[in-house]
Length: 255
Image (tube, rainbow, N blue to C red):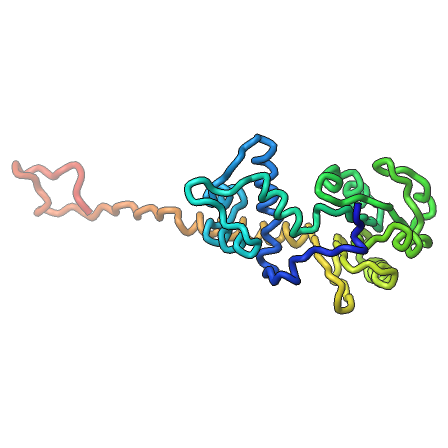
């Protein structure tokens, strides 16, 4: 099985836009669910709805892959799973190191989706000497002193940083110097990397803040949409002219 250090995905050389690359995992997730239900074909409309995009955008994205579907039949699910997996480089074995084995790092280590998606956790690394040798998800934690040799020995090109913010840049620098060219950053800080190194940032607090913004806006819209009650009628004083047809004063007078 090929490793991540010797093979890289072909998306850039084929000129696939970054926005399309970002949507490919969404399509793959939807297609995998269809495959698990033994669905043989899917229309662009059905797949777009499952992936949360519009069908015109999906067809444009698939045109970059050279996949156009069959009119009246749709797309072959198994073939698309293979095609997208190949474009994303998931038909290879990508060894990954996770640095920072606190609560988040341990949760990532225990995540079962890595192996089924082409990623192998090659090592868990932490700066705490007390963690060294302790198994997490069946993998013994190694000290950061061994970081460079671990990357070299395992041919690692993808690193995951789950350290506190203050340690993240130093860890990043060491990963890059050791040969890592792609980093998934969970630390709440912005990393500086040289050209040729890709960084994807996952900040849960930012995502929650964005959701809070939308909740606040929805609450404001609901408050604006609430109907305003009409003011109560104020009765005016009755006069001699305010009499009914028989000369009596009506019990209720219009305002």
